Amino acid sequence: MLSRVKCIRPLTSAKRFYSKSELLTTPKYPGAVNAKFTKDLVFHNAVPNEPVFPIFHIMDLQGKIINQSSYKSVRETLDDDTLVKMYKTMIQLETMDTILYNAQRQGRVSFYMTNYGEEAVQIGSAAALTETDEIFAQYREAGVLMYRGFTLEEFMNQCFSTSKDYGKGRQMPVHYGSKSLRVQTISSPLATQIPQASGAGYAIRLSDRKDVAICYFGEGAASEGDFHSALNFAAVLKSQVIFLCRNNGYAISTPTSDQYKGDGIVARGLGYGIHSIRVDGNDPFAVYMAVREARKMSTEKHVPVLIEAMTYRGGHHSTSDDASRYRTTNELTYWREQMNPIFRLKKFLTNEKLWNEENENQVRDDTRKKVLSLLTSVEKAEKTHLDELVTDVYDQVPETLKEQKKFVDAMAKKYPEAYSEGH
Image 1 (spheres, helix red, strand yellow):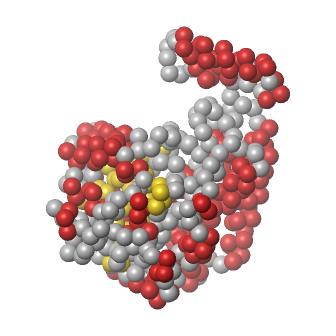
Image 2: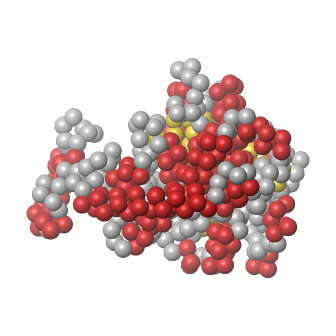
């Protein structure tokens, strides 16, 4: 069935950059360079007539609405206050990312991952969910938590492993989780959350809940076996789950041209009998509408839905990565400046008289002051007691963990300057 899907080829160096007029009509996302824009919100259950799946969008790069019918539908459930909240969350996230990235470079936090360039996928989708939907994130969904109410203090406590960290300091930084916000704790192994989300969606259906589980992952994670098992499981058992793939161009250092030869990730859904759609991940309205309609379809028809959001990772994969080794400064500048989803939404809000530079400066300044203040306090905050390393999982601590705990205690005794008393 997928034989008609055209093989995607990478951009040649001579055609890496496009004129503004070309960009307004044809997107050039690395993961689907030959895909065209469409104004039709279609969840495909068969290969489309086009040689590649089109990209649904509502707003162009200048913040101009070019899909009036879809925009009208969006505005039926998205008021002015919510639009402003979406944008404020995006710039708060960007501000926090910049400060914590620099803090890691200063040796003040062990590890960090920024969300540059993918803010619209996170915020647009979060706005379309309800507070009772279950979230299974990867590690670049901080914006989803922030939109739901995860505070700057909670972010900082997790990254610095303070005693207030819900994970008791056991996880790497940026591996957030919140029971109250229904966000399952992020884990480092790639794609493990995808079959978990399928199971959660199955449980939701069996419980007759009008909710969904939504699972975020990158196109690199879609190369894992867990992805295929999860989609088949969800389709057969009619799980109420939305699979949202952020196709950001790179799986760490591996470009999409070296990851697959088919038409991205969206085409894979059809093989499992899952309704699938490709959207402009840098257009928050397109993401919002796609997730809103996917949620409606999933809860009413008791089926899974696959969304491929085309976007671009605007920063390093993590602070352990040097993206300059596999992409040029010009490429990064192009995406950060011309294709930035934050700039796009700002232009729209400014044109609608919902935002101005005074608002911008105020929010950025307030966020910066708050993060810097928290940075000072969390560095001095009490850490979780070392005994917590071996609690919670077993009723009786097994001998293997006891031996490991003895080793840690010995290290703490040998290097007391690196440990506070008992911590």
